[in-house]
Image 1 (cartoon, one colour):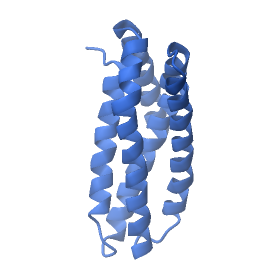
Image 2: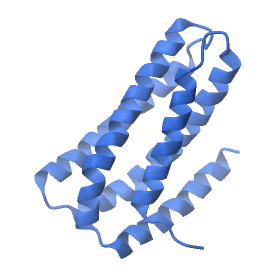
Image 3: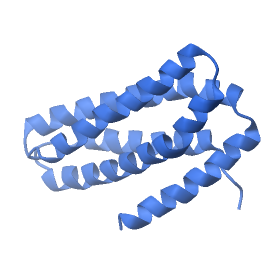
Length: 155
């Protein structure tokens, strides 16, 4: 089995969550069951993704970079995760048969997509400069194993 480097793994997660968020945004108040199901999938994906980033990728990035702006980017990324961790439980408590739920889903999508775009355009290129391809592959192996472990606990 071919190993996936850390950045490829994270980009695949971004793509999957983006699709789920787009599906959620297309729903209406008439589909509360579908909304709940999609939100549960999104929540699981985001919780696993942020965990592997915070436990494995971000510390490796922080320790490898030398520029101040890269270290600032690390702290901003962690803070953006905190915002999403605040928003997710709030939207989960909102009645999916309401317009309010739709508005919160849109805000969640905007937050997550902004974060993913910053990572892909700024953080990942810096990581590729600061970490060797071998290091990125080793991180990918660790992240994939941790991801499987976390997903197993959610089933």
